[in-house]
Image (cartoon, rainbow, N blue to C red; front, side, top):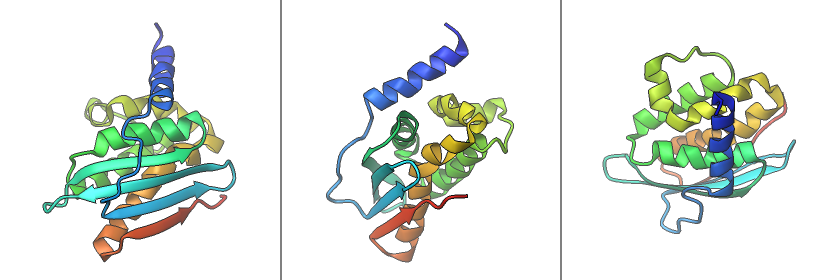
Length: 158
């Protein structure tokens, strides 16, 4: 099996069998995010513990395979992380899908299955699909720091 095929299978698996999908009624922050250009929509639910770790992360939404798989993989990757580490992972992921970073072995290890989305950097019109959940997470962490509980993120056209 080729690496490209393996990566495609990872994306399809997360799309067809999303992890951490569902509402989280006791969420500290809820972020509604949408990309009006392509119709991707998601609601991200964040629950942080007393040590500002992402104790639970869930999402609901509709959209293309890339946006939904990215959201699923993101919830797996950040669950349990301290807020600061989640913020670092957001930046690393966004740099990868925007083609702004060469991934070394350490970065690939931190990203795990998310590396399967690296090819999105070659598909400019799909970058917003891959980053929608990540931008929502960033907005949610900023909203949490402000003491808020609800935020909305609407992606703009470039």
